[in-house]
Image (cartoon, rainbow, N blue to C red):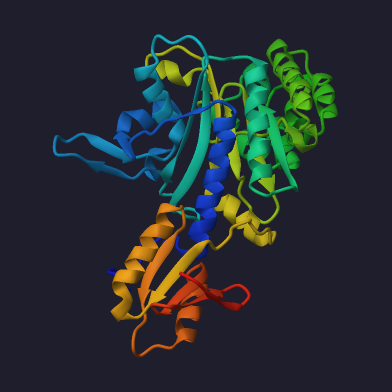
Amino acid sequence: MDRLIHTPEGVRDVYNQECTKKLYLENQIEQVFHAFGYQDIETPTFEFFDVFGREVGTTPSRELYKFFDRDGNTLVLRPDFTPSIARAASMYFMEETMPIRLCYRGSSFVNSSSYQGRLKESTQMGVELLNDDSAMADAEIIAMTVKVMLDAGLTDFQISIGHVGFFQALSEEAALAEDVLNELKELISIKNHFGAEELLAKQNLRSDLFEALRDVPQLFGNAEILEKAKGLTRNPAAREALDRLATIYEIVKDYGYEKYVFFDLGLLSKFHYYTGIIFQAYTYGTGEPIVKGGRYDALLQHFGKKAPAIGFCTVMESLMNALERQKISLPIANTKTMLLYPDFLQPLAVKLANEHRSKGMDVALVCFARDKVLADYEEYGRKNQFGGIVYIQKSDSVLAIDLSTGEVQPVEL
């Protein structure tokens, strides 16, 4: 492999129409963020290792890209935006007690060698809502997720919502050993009901607690599943989590987005900083969630600010894959104009290009080479997303060529 022109495994170039689509989607999503009153923030691409350390509950150390600075400090390419935003918020908004709404976009890096073919660099766009622990804040984040999916062009999708507190309350009541708990989480994550039942049968549990934990992988569906789950346990913390989800659902109904909501009480995350609701947005055409998020009320305290928070991130590569596989086209017009001219009319061409640019047009100057014909430039224009060509043949002879229809018309300067 020629390392001069090839990219390393797990990263790729994005160009031409794909890049145009990606930038269009990023703009659409950013408009959603701003429409809900969120302000932009940028954090460094790399941080001190401590920001993503084990105690934060983020990406495992073996999956981090680590390197050293000249002073011997261990630095890390960010694998996840949330700890970075939490660090920055703790630094710049330490004394603020009113809600803080922040939005971001950028690359994240995870060395997930266990997943062959998965990108190790991905573009993420997301929001964080700090200093608000209300169900209204939770519902706002869910509503924004729905709006992001809709404005990206998707119509057939669902938001799976769970609550960390439900399973946590049951597992703490059961006092499961750490290895048993980890195995149970794995089984629940893959919806292995029988595996969970077999594992739990080996533990010395009360019958009601056994049944509640056993049924967690099957507790998914519409809002009625919350009442079913409530009938399985008298645990106050577990029931409180269910009540919270029911309250959030009622507010989501006020937004008119309830048809996109789906509850999954077996939804768990590899990130250990989540403390309340947790959710993922899915659609067909991609095996990975497009949006992931949840509440993390204890994370900012790690950085010195005691404040509740909730947020989500959109994985742009997963979103684009879904749109492509569902054959959803984006309303992107080729608005660039090629101003084609012979070399002896260069001064006129430059003057015309500047005049059109001052009016807001996108104009690229291209000199007509002696070894080319007009058809070569038409083909070049179509391949490079030009909408049309303005061809200056002579100082008093100009043609306008529409590259989408092939129509040619004379125009006056």
